[in-house]
Structure formats: structure tokens, C-alpha cells
Image 1: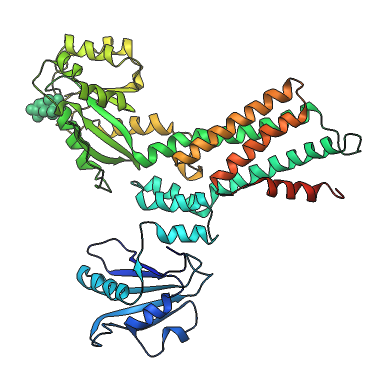
Image 2: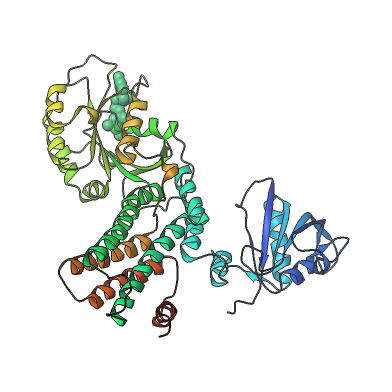
Length: 459
Ligand code: GDP
Ligand code: ZN
């Protein structure tokens, strides 16, 4: 498969919609579009970045299939950096499919998922982290994740990585000069200088990693297990949360777990709610907890909502659960506050701080907002406005950042223990390369050597 062949796909979501866009990219994009599009002018003759009105026709018999607005964007000033033609048609599913069929019959082949973005990367239009952000964007399940991915497309992560790398490169270049010209009158490199610069870089990497947690949560959802003995109101709570917070996306891959699972968005934060009671509501609670699936759900949970009934004293089952959940991020939800209260709140307060105990009534629709606030508070800590964050939301990025962190820690340690500076150089160089992999800079010896040979004049 060569990069030069021409690809096409429907670029707007399938289904009802005002308009649908079919995107064609590649060397033959304009010719393919000209085969199926009739207008005053041939697309091959129109100015780039202009829109033409006309009709999509079946080239076999000239029959009009659709009305269309067609945009021609000649490379490299296009999304893929290749010639791109976009056909905007009416949104009807049948006619859009028909248009795509005609396009494919005229010399384009169906694009693979993400292939337009892949081409943008291969053609050097965007870097790897931006390409991945586009993928995240397409998959993101909440507003905040969407905004985060959008910022990354803008390149805010790339910018951070790039500036960090150039700081590292400057330091490495300094060290290099010192190695090559020990008696030269360049600024002498003290251990303190190297340590200062290295720990500055390390702090930046740590900062990016600490935002990674939110990034992960925002993209995949906080796995939230609702547990409690039978009849305390778990299913009612699940329903209430689901009704109030319509999930934006419902295409969560089905799980084989026998657990009722709902996807909701609370204050922009996606939650994957698991009603573990869905397993066997009537079973003895101890046995129920023993069920491996239930345990699995609990083990997987980022957050546990332990539901108790406020209208009854704590039972042995409740206490067992309170013990069982020790060490898990837990909110204790005391339900049924509309009924006369008989639960021993003091005993719960002895185990959990006040802000972890939320009193609600699902039936009277009271306290749900406080519960949602508590969840939000727990995971965003309310300190930083998400808008100001760069989320590192990609497993590959996190992995590489961790490696870079390790390399910088080693450099720092070496710098503090009188190791020869060319040994420190190796660690710094590793960090520089690991960071480079995030943005898809294929780095080789030659590139580094080239940079250094320029820096060390006359060498
Ligand atoms: P689960 O077994 O823990 O899932 O509990 P359910 O959600 O099935 O609820 C058990 C019973 O408690 C049902 O009859 C609910 O209508 C009732 N219930 C749930 N929440 C409340 C509440 O806040 N107040 C009152 N009075 N009843 C409730
Ligand atoms: Zn239930």
C-alpha cells in the first residue's frame, strides 16, 4: 500500500444529520471527485480552498444522485498535506452511502480507521502526540476529555515537551564542550549547575506525570462500584444517577461481567457505575462479596459508593462491608434520610471523615447533588481548573514520561556523587530521546552528533 493512493471515507457521524461530509485524500483526489461531480467548472481548474456548488452524478448514466457543496484543498495546505476534496451532501444515510460507493468506484479506496490522521503524521503535518490526540478526540467520552484532547491537538503537550527537550539539549551541549575542551574558557560546569538544570527538568516531567492521572480518568471514566447489602437502595441510586446524567456516549464495549454497568457524566467527569448487587441480590452478603466477579469489580474500582440505609441500625453485614472496604477510596452513602433515622452515624464517623459521609434520599431526591459534588471533589481536588491543564491521556506518553523521569533521576544522582560527567551525559541523552519518542521525533546518533558538531565550532 503506497502513501500515494487515494482514500475516501464518510467523515461525519453515521445516522441522521443535517449534512454529511465525504473526505477524499491523495494524489488522485481531485480526479476522483471530478468523475462524480458536475458543476460549472472542472474541479481540476478551480482555485484551491474554494467551494463549488453542483451535483453528484452516477458516471455510468449521468443520473443526479445528490446536491453537493465541494471543497478543494490542494496539498500541502490541507489536513493530510495531500490533495483533499470534501463533498458535503444532505445527511440521509442512504444517499451518503451511495455517494461514497460512486467515489470508491471512481478510483479511491476506503480509508482505514484513522488513516487521514496517519497520513497527516507521515507527511509531517502533525507530530505523533497530536495524531494520538486526534484519536483520543474521536473516542473521548466527556466534555472535559474532549477539551483536553483538543488542546493536545493544538500541541500544548508538544510545546511542553519541545521546550523541555531544548533545555536538556542546551545542558548536554554545555557538558559536551566541557568534555571536548576541558581547558577551554567556556563556562565551567560545576556539579551544582548540572544538578540545578537536571532537577528543573525532572520537576517538569513530574508535573506532566501528575496530570496524567486525571487524563486517564477523564478518558476512560472513574470505575465506581456501588455496594451495600440488599434493599438499601443501590439500584435506585444507580437509576437516579443515570437519569440525571445522561451519558454522552453509549458505545462502551460490552463486558462479560454479570454486573449492571452504566456510563454517566457527573460535572463533566465520566463515571462507569457498577451495581455489583446485580449479581445475586438475595444471596447472603458474605457469600456475595466472596463471589469472584463481585470481588473483581471491587478490585477494579477507583471509587466505591457504600450504600447504607439510614432507617435501620447497622447490621453485621454493613460492618463487614465497612471493614472490607478499608483502604479503598470510599464514599459512605447513607440513604433513606426521608424515613425516621435509626442508623448509628457516630459509628460511621469513627471510621470515615465527615466529608466522606453523604446523607441522601433517592426517593425524595435529596442529597444527590452533594454526592455528585463529593465525587467531583475527590478526583479533581477542586484545585486546578481543568481548562488550565495539559492532560497526558495516553498510555504510551505516560510510559515514556516515566522512563524519562527515571533517566533524569539517575542523572541527578550521578551528578551528586562525583561520577565523571560523560556518564551523566548518557542519562541526559536517554531522557532527551525518551521525550522525543513522545512527539515521534525519530532520533538517531547522527542528529545529536550533528547538533553538537554545530555547537562546538571548529571541531
Ligand atoms: P438494592 O437492593 O440495594 O438495590 O435496593 P433497591 O434500589 O432495589 O431499593 C430497595 C427498596 O428501597 C425499594 O423499595 C426502593 O423503593 C426503596 N428505596 C430506595 N431508596 C429509598 C429512599 O431514599 N427512601 C425510601 N423511603 N425508600 C427507598
Ligand atoms: Zn438492586
